[in-house]
Length: 501
Image (tube, rainbow, N blue to C red; front, side, top):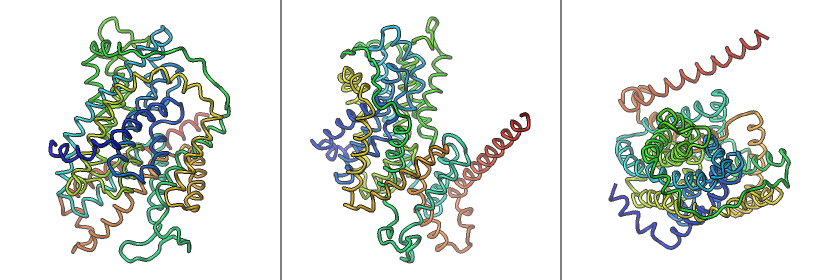
């Protein structure tokens, strides 16, 4: 653990990496404040920029956006009763009542400081657990990697928000996209349709930008209210929240650990961890704490959990190459674009990069603790920006970033096509994250499965004869049974409703 930090320190402590990490926190906060955007959108918009940067400055910037965006959503929840991100949905239970009582300043200060300290606790768990998990994964061969990729695909698809069947279909679509391009084993072209631009498959950046950023622009255009501007009370800089937070230290640590644990479970998400932490904090509340009516502990619990979840989500992402949520899926895509492969190989061959990423995450939370409070007066001004100005800026950034990636007009067409696909899928309540995860894990699954078949003497028995792969496939079987049960239960429930009518 300490060797990783020692190796990564020279890469991170440069003016470029430190500056971009601080800038990422600021950008993430403002993106998180704006309802409908959030950390995923920020990472997607800056992904083309990261492609042209050195590895640690690039990952530092993206991870900082992830951290800042996860914290920023609470501000609009407190001031407007509109969560800037799903992560902040539970924060409005007590944050908004605090604002209604004239304590908006305290509520925002508690949310920012709880997020930063919760993120630091999650970072310490990440720093301790990731090398251990990666060291265990060094025992993996092609069968184990194939089994882990399959488990990652099923886990994300099954626990995706909404229908399990739709999550599986979305993951399958991502796997289909991963088959396009040149076969690694035979060099044959697959599903290129005679277009040389597809010989390497669709580039993941225009796909991600289209699915998430462009589809969101379409949704915002459809909803209207382009010139609406809310009335926000005046805010000022205050470090009083640090003193208030001292009275909730047990709640803070407990909630951060809950968030970290939930984040380490692929697909669980920060919104789930926030609600669980809130429920636990409410049950453990001291006499006189009136949760739901402006209790400080409610804000502390939800915000410590959702940023602790960030550190937790990076554990399987960096150690095993299995994204913890949609944002870490795009972070893994960035790591791939920069030429590094998450998992045991990252810790074995690029320990300095892994150490630099850990330091970037920890420093990002420290910057959040300071900048989040200092920038409080500006958050109200950002919330007053009408969509008539915001949407063209998002569209411009998406277009410029995608084109600058390879100076390719074809990438712009890919972005536009997947923007339309993302819009239609969201209208039909299909989750988008499994598509990206399918694109990332699809080649891992296919190539390692084929390698396993080449080295096997007993066909598919190689997956059962090896204890680790057999155990992982046992988990896959449990996930499949759970998926089938969930799908059947949904159909039976729908049939009973129809019959009752």
